[in-house]
Length: 207
Image (tube, rainbow, N blue to C red; front, side, top):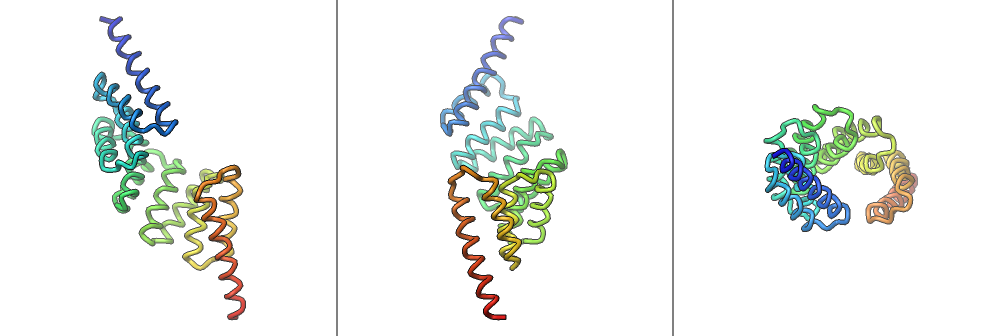
């Protein structure tokens, strides 16, 4: 029996590792398949349910992802990652108030999680609650000055608050930290900076 238990544990670990590798390679369906097989052997493993939710979320199957995170949290109410990951999925569905609630749960368990602060700030930003969003982004940057997404978020907030110079500084910092990253978000930051400079010139003419 002990030998069978060891083999089962090794099989579960192998499936989790295989699923994680697929997740890194953005092969989300294959990742979910591996996690499902692992859950057949250990259905009470909160971390597998959480990983499965991440894969489903990356595949934009947000409702399925949320169900997976809910199971993870039923099994382990203090699963910090599951709370935060469920918040991200809820945010993708524009259920921002619920997302903030999830991030709050995550931050109660780990107040120094800069990513959770950043994600909470993004949810507030989408609700157009800019002072609250700014507070969250500042908290994220206090914990991790190299959190590029928090700099981008802060820049967007400053733009909508009409603080153009500060917005440009924040976006410049985001671009600096994103060297080598040719993502659409970096291109958007460059475009936003150009737009902000035009707005600043117009404001000077109007003075």
